[in-house]
Amino acid sequence: MAYYVTKQIGRHRYRYEVEGHRDPKTKRVKQRWTYLGRVFEDEVVEAQRARADDSRERIVAAILQLLERGDIEVLTVDVISRAARVSRGTFYRVFRNGKVAIKTAIESVYTELLAVPPRLDEPIASVAVERKRLARWMTALLETVLRRPGVHRALVQSPLLSKLRLERVENNAAETHRSLQHYLERLVAAGLVETDSPERLAIGIMSVGHGFYKRVILDRQERLAQMLIESGVETICRATFGPS
View 1 (cartoon, rainbow, N blue to C red):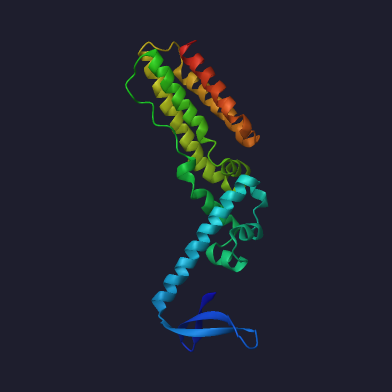
View 2: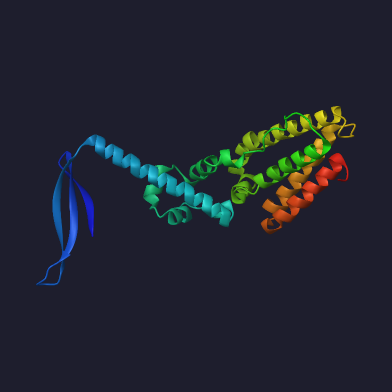
């Protein structure tokens, strides 16, 4: 099998193809070098950049996979490097330390992690339509936390990531709460929901989400997720619109 080698001779680099072959007389494996030409500086830089990008992607992917299998405390540089199949030297050429690598990996999935259901700002229709709309919205909201549970746990468990969680995850939750409260106020105005405090009702609905998050993600009960989603959505719809 052939492979390629770049040799530094003086101030210049040269590219060779190296192919192993077995001498028919001695039965020994020998190498045949074929000169391919000089490698210019821009080619070297581009090749180095490509290798760095590939290593970065492998390290990030390894971290995300490791988080789904264990807690963030076990993610040492050695563990990450082995999972990514890179050397420690390569790791440190790409990332300054393990903390930076973990933060980079988690930031890479924020768009996916923080995706929320569409805003509840469509025109209000009948009770039956709005019951289904709220059920779909709440189901989508609860399913959001099932995306990358290991990353969610890391955000809660690690002091390193607490600032990220405060800045992004909690701000995202606040926006979701405002959207829900506004929707409930519109339902009350339309005469479809009876409550003297849409704000408290919104808090109650969001607390179901928080309880689901704790039970499924923090307590590692993913196997109960579907049952809890169905029962939670049914409870919310009954509390909001009454029995169906």
